[in-house]
Image (cartoon, rainbow, N blue to C red; front, side):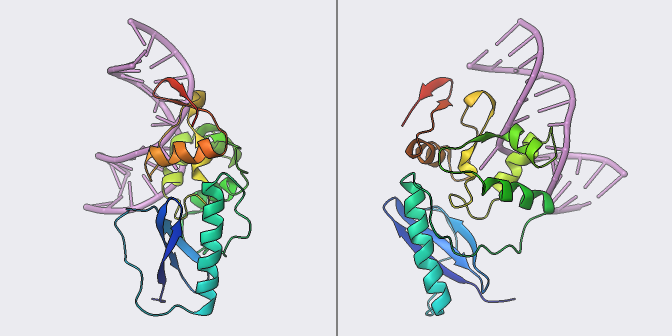
Length: 171
DNA sequence: CCCTAGCGGTGCT
DNA sequence: AGCACCGCTAGGG
């Protein structure tokens, strides 16, 4: 199996963890998430560049702005359905949202809203592949693997208003 | 608000 | 093949 490099991504909101392959960014995890620790060996120059790009992009999205230049995303994983969902997610700009049902129809599987939710949860690169912009029907927040607190915070920075447990919340 | 039935993709057996 | 997951949804109390 090819080596991957696990690197810390420092942001104003905490230290994320990124894993890079030779092809690009494979996975990103939220601060406090149990996972592999950063590697001991110095990463290649390409990985260091991707790490900087990731840090910059992440800080931008956390601030509600477009990410700018992204590192290459390693396409090597996911089912066809999941990749179609992730591809559709990448078309969403900050502040632009869809519902799980909308997204299902857009990838040609009307009625597969629940499966879309599952695919969002399987997204290996949250925030940069903006699964937080997918809401439940009726303007409700819906779920989020990284915790709904993150989802609400990310959306709030983008000026999106959501319904949280029935009451309207900004943030 | 709650509960229920129905749904589709995925992964495990 | 069967089955139990799930970031869902629509409908009814």
